[in-house]
Length: 481
Image (cartoon, rainbow, N blue to C red; front, side):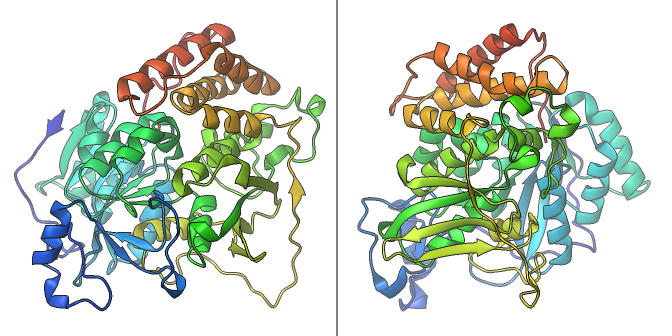
């Protein structure tokens, strides 16, 4: 559904700047005069990247670049002016922090479109007015009247309103719109379609929606050009930055850190009677309810292991998870010479968001830094796989590949909703997910995997999980944006 007013200017808060089109810069040292004609020829041949390294001019020694590589920049844009950005999930945790970053850096970023589910209309309208966006989108069509009313109140009588998109395809439409970067901050596998749309349209994808990569890994890899995806998860943004110190051929293992969540140190028996409120009390991060419960079960960490494998093309047996209660070190890379590069900041998602939106440039003062003159304790512990079996199960489904990760993720989403609704105890979340994965059996795999295959697997997993948990509604009845 589209509600399109007459064309309008962006208003005084968003001065016009040259439209940014995808192009490829000449490599360092090349004739700058070649950046137009020859770049067009390279695009026709499918080349969309500029080398930024690696160190000492070495090659990786690997057959193909990984999905995420700090040494490669997809279609960098020359010239002055802010990057045009679309934010999917603007009223959620990632979206609101991204907007805070944008408002503090108007010379770097300009938001052209916002998408939200439709549950926080007043906030969405306020965001649209402050950012002077061209387009506002809501997943729920029934939210359009309230959105139009809220926009009118924000803009004032007689002021032209932004274009309104609504319905299940709104996110996909907005992701493919004319912009430089799409920040996908939607929660859940419903983020797959806009992820694919952004990649197919040639946009740089700042990816916070890990589920779209996990459930549609082969589909994402088939569309993405090297360097086109910039990870926004704190752990993967950390790995991305640490990898700049070497190459994938130099990597011995990836070390992904976990806070341990609110139940760190408890045994499986001690977790039997924990409540929803207990699970939502994360000790170090402020996040939305779904990801917070996923952090309590450590499903989120399991998903991040699969994500690390897909982003960096590192085998599962070389991806380690360690518990780090302080959440200061977000991930580490151990290199073959025995050295380890760690990325550390106080827990604040504005840092990873700034990497996603600004790379290869860094955004000054994006997030707080450490005061290194003050002593602090940094601890690291092994993961208790008995109390938290989710990480090993995630490794298993990641190795199965195909539709198995989609089944794992869909079953977990349904179980989280059942737990939040009081229909399922905490320990039964992973017990139920494990059963659904086992019943799914051998997944459809290989290059023949399609979007309908993923959707069919998800539909089956959701229905089966609802049968096992006694639910009557689906966890994805509405977009979590």
